[in-house]
Image 1 (cartoon, rainbow, N blue to C red):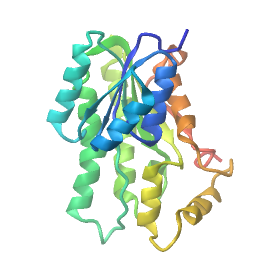
Image 2 (image 1 turned 180 degrees about the vertical axis):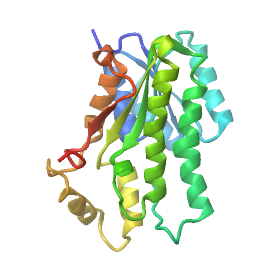
Image 3 (image 1 turned 90 degrees about the vertical axis):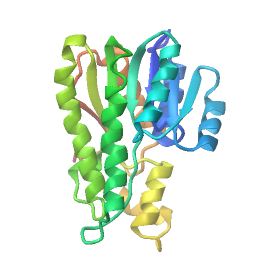
Length: 252
């Protein structure tokens, strides 16, 4: 018996990092999983790794028509939808004085608009009692240089969870956030390169680790464990809340 037997889940940004690790864990717990990604080659590689209980739809969460294609594919399965993990996100670096409209629009389109419509377009398929999981970030509570717009988008995600938990309570749909700290993912490495191109990723991580009580970056599978908790009945009395996996960085 798995914690997610016969459940159907959608994970956006499911081709690498936290999304891919979560898809793998959901499948191990008995779920059918639909993943999305913008690049076909990465999507194909992820599906090959995940096996027959996974399906993929290439698309950008910031594009409404792409989300429509995703949910049309889910609807064809005839099982409704039990879990939505709005995980797709972009991290880019720009300090005030150097923020461009392109930088702002890119982050807001994916990290805010993409989350809103990933959830809203799922509502007709969501079964009563379903779980919605939003991927947040410890950055929302920090003043890290160059990450102002990114942090603001993740603060918005936290705010949406509180509101949607109230708005969807009559259907028994729970909405929660995973607050992920520094995690060893391609996205984190990309931020490292943008932050200081002259410093190796290993040095960037070492600098971050200095502020993490557990003395290391998290692994994607550790964040996926939090997602399994929020997706399953283990968290049946949790809504509008956060599960923080940050090695203590924002806690102590």
